Image (tube, rainbow over all chains, first blue to last red; front, side, top):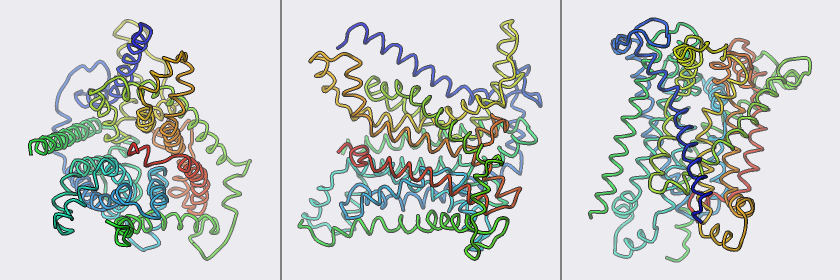
Length: 268
Length: 287
C-alpha cells in the first residue's frame, strides 16, 4: 500500500489542508490587524499600531449593553437547549420507539432551513401572537435552530452509550432517579458539555435570527452589521476580534473541562 | 427486561418536549408564511382573504424576482460543486490520514462557525479592498496594486464557499470514515486500480455522508444573503434579499411570504428526498 505514489499524494493532501486552513484564518487575521491600526480608516501596511480602538470599545456604554444582551441570550439559550436536547437525544438514539425514524427527520428540518427566512417567519408568528420582539423573543428564535443542532451533538454521544448499564443498575436495585443520576448523566456528561458549547457559541455569533426577532434590542453581531453597512469605525474589527477571542477562551475552557472529566472517569 | 409498554413510551416521553417546542417555534411560523402567501398583496388580511397574485408576481417574466431565483440557484450549484472538490481531500485526510491529530485539525475547521458570519466576511473586505491587505502587500513588493476585486458575483461565490465549507466537510468526513480500510486494501490486493477502488468501493460507501454534505451546502447557499450584501455589494440580488426587501422596505408581507414559500418548497422537497436515502443511525452512530 505504502508505495511512493501514495506518499506523494499524501504530501499533496497535507499541503492542501494547510493551504485551506491558512485561507480560513486569513480574514480573521485581517480583522485583528485592522483593529490594531491607529488611523480612523484602515490602510495596509499599518503605519502605527495601537490599542486605542480596543480601549474605546471597552469603555463604550453602548457596547456594554450589546455584550449584556448577547450574553443573556446565549446563556438562556444554552440552559434551555441543553435540557430539551438531552431528552431529545435520548429519543433520537437511545430508545427504540415507533415514530423514531420520522422524528429524526423532522428534527433535522430546521437545520436545513435558511435562517433569514426562519427569522422572518418567526416575526410573522410573533406578530400574530401579539408579542413585541425583544431579546426574550430572540432567545425563542435561537432555540428553534439551536435545539436540533445540540440534539444531534448529544445524540452522537448517546449512540456510543451502553444502555445495558442502566439495566444492570436496575437489577442491583437502583430506582429510576438513581439510575439517571449515577449512570446515565455521568456517562453522557462529555456530550452534554459539547452540546452546551455549541449552543452558547452558535447563539453568541448568530446574526440572521437576531436581526428579525430581537426587535429594538441589539446584539454584538447586529451592531457589527449595522456599522459595516453605514458608519464604519475601527471599533467594528476591535469588537469582532474581541468576540473571536472570547469564543476561543470558552472553547478552551470547555475543552479542558471535558478532558479532565475523562481523566477523572478513567482514574476511577 | 421484556418488551413492556413502559419502555416503548420512554422514547415518546423524551421526544415530546422537543416536538412540542418545534410545533410552536417551527411549524406554526411556517403556517403563518403559508397564510400570508395566499393573502391579498400589500395587505395584512391573513387567512381572511385568498389570492394567487403574489405567486404570479413572483414568477412574472417581466419582473426581476425570477432572476433572483436564477442567481441564487446557480450560485448555490456552483458553490456546492466547488466545495465538493475542495472538501474531498480534506475529508479524506481527516478520516484516514491524520490519526490522533484529526480531532485537533477538526476543531480548527469548526471554530470559524462560532465567529459571526459578518465578522468573517468583513475580514475578506479588509483583505481585498483597495488599500487593504492584498493591495498593500503587492505594492510593498513593488508591483501594481490589485484591480477592483470586491462587489462582483465571483466574490459573492467566494464568500459562500468560505462560509459553507464546514457544512460540506463534516458530513463528508463522517461518510468517508464509514469506509473500512481493509476493504480498500482487499480491493488493491485483488488488483483493482486506484480509480477503480475509488469508484467502486470508496465513493459508494461514503455516499450517504457526501449526499448530506451536498444537500446541506446547496440548501444553505440557496438561502444566502449576507455574502451578497457584504462582499457582493448587491451586484447580485439573491432570493432571500428580495424576501427581506418585501418584508421591510416594501411592507408587502404577502409577496415576501410567497417568495419564501417557493424557496421553502424547493429546499424542503430536496431535503426530504435526501433524508429518505440515508440511514441516520448508521451514519451518526456507526451502527
